[in-house]
Length: 245
Image (cartoon, rainbow, N blue to C red; front, side, top):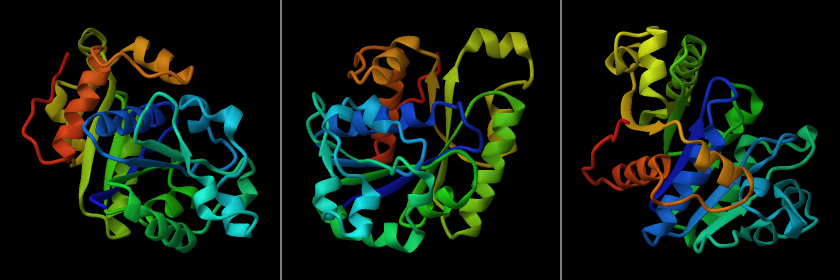
């Protein structure tokens, strides 16, 4: 296994799950086997975004309770060769403990190149479980002060939990809106506030969001997907532009 990455955000609505799915898709397009783990117990949604809801029988809580094997909770994603999902429980009280999730990832991770863990927004118990197995983190923010503050909080929690390899993703970026709102002088100010190294800027792109929300693959030529492919390249150590649009 090459890496275990947690995708986190301080506030809901940043598009964190879209980034998780898009990044997983980009990594598989480059020949990797990727497991997405949905850690948002009670609010799971990656099964909808990946088009597997009709086939879903077991989730991660079923494996913990002994109702099935861990392998039974891993679902291949239609039309996305090499991408797999481990869905979250439908009920919040079935949330998996951090150490248990760590054992699960250790058990199945060897057959994947990357494990991407989609953390619930905020820094609650679900966040603590999601970050436990992770080796690195991507913090997803938008260009609003409340989102930036949330990113700061999440980054601080990640560092306190021993994760030092943390990168910033600015999602749903619209240059015109950014300039008109004039909340920040430039992108460098956001980087300075969060004290995180920027790994990518994903432009606002309703076509990708609509495709993923309907369980379809986004157009690889659309601006947002191109930006996510660039992030996938940078994760793998390649030198590519940030691609700001």
